Length: 89
Picture 1 (cartoon, rainbow, N blue to C red):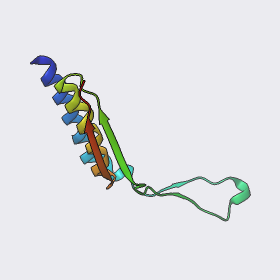
Picture 2: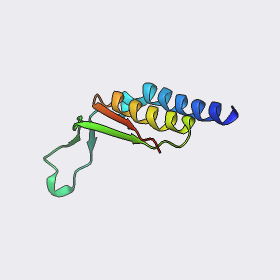
Picture 3: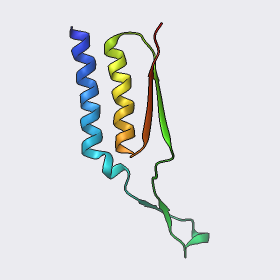
């Protein structure tokens, strides 16, 4: 029971972090340019590239929860589609 609560608490904390700070991580960023390109700007933008796949091994239920929700939280924050498969032994 203690291990289950530990895994769930860590996972929920990761999800909370993504909810609170995920949008700021995905904002367009400017980077310094070399002196040779002083008349240009370097802007980094983040765009969804496609489908995120999560193949979760069947180890223990609490580990599956952690692995699956970690990937789900990332895909939601990046506005990407997700496919999930839980492998059984």
